[in-house]
Image (cartoon, rainbow, N blue to C red; front, side):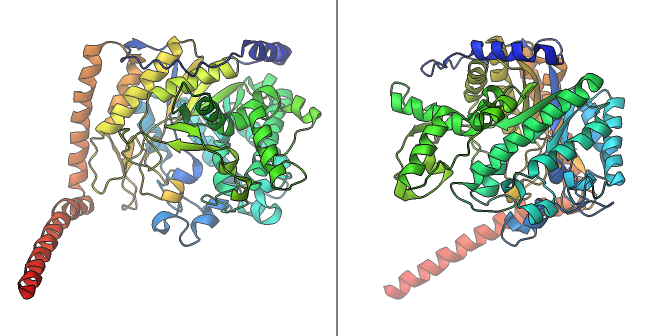
Length: 566
């Protein structure tokens, strides 16, 4: 399973020669497919350190950029923070038992850089208590036959590095990340065989340094995102080479990256400009990072568009940084597997932005994003359920990058609900349809080896705080013990895992009924909680009653006004 060094160049040549053009006009939206995944397919669930651990200042942990960002009023909905979140730091055994009950094959989590290196620098301080926490988690996973998949960077940069160097705007982060990764390989690598360098670097760059919606909250429009991404790609490559030259022969593991991408579908597949706009949409997200990592340089369309816009703005050079020929050779092929995160789809059409619109990552693309109002959207305002886009994206990756080994590292759907109904039919439908489209892609020949549901638990959802819930397990954040309750989708996903897919229509149709029984039991447990019961009463009885009274009073007042006029 490990890609050994002597065959690395041959692997690259095969990947490049296998690249084909994607057929944008062919979109097969076929009926539900009953069948199973190949033997050995890995099923898992995911989390990240800041979103679930809590314990933000316990046992020697240093501050992260998210600790600092969440403390700025107005940055997070309801001014929530991840200070306590799911209290995952204190509930390792409980959470591993949930995974064991679901029969997960793997669990994806991230190491908090400031938890093990409080100042971010290995030479200054190693926090052994932080190391022990991850040691214990890894050991407990392995004891329960659950494979740990470890992400090195899921957005929580040590605040000390942000303050001292400017974070990912500074090329020095490449070496600091290398030292952090080396410590993780040294301490955990004898038991961890799957490493993810970065989670969704698009968000790190764009939302952290372009729009400022995420930590560290900088708005360096038109340049900050490109500079951050440039350094992240270099950091990824350096860590891959570190593992390849110093650790691979000893530890026999794999190092990849997790890239999150929506699918972009042309509004009109007979319109060449719409097709080009849709491909630009993909290249400015997935291709921005995947093309350098697989082929050594940025997508040509990015270089062309950003270069032209920069020239029109009177700049002497492109706002997109340039890799030297030595850097291109160093970066090319630094991926043993591609982690792919996917949630939703957009329709895309051509839209020209004049240079007078100013520097912006978004205007550089010259396109507009649209959604079909009939697409379901149960939670996040950006997340519409469009299952067929998943199969399209997987096939695009197959053709664009020579059919690399793919692990789906994030896929799931949120909800925004006032009450605590655990019968999440919409999530069951989402998982059923998205996993089925992945199965169709496997039948198409796409080399998908595993799937990670996002997320195991409801957790802190970045700038949305606790208002959006992705979890298979409901977490009661109002209770200091943060109890977990299974949603119906947890039971449904468990049945997908045990069947390794969708064996036959009769059995699959029976799953939903059994999942409903599970959520009924969980709802009974929730109702027994006096605080939850009180909130349910407020949500389901008091609020509607007050609304009804307001309507009646308004009607009486309106009648009074009309009589006065008469």
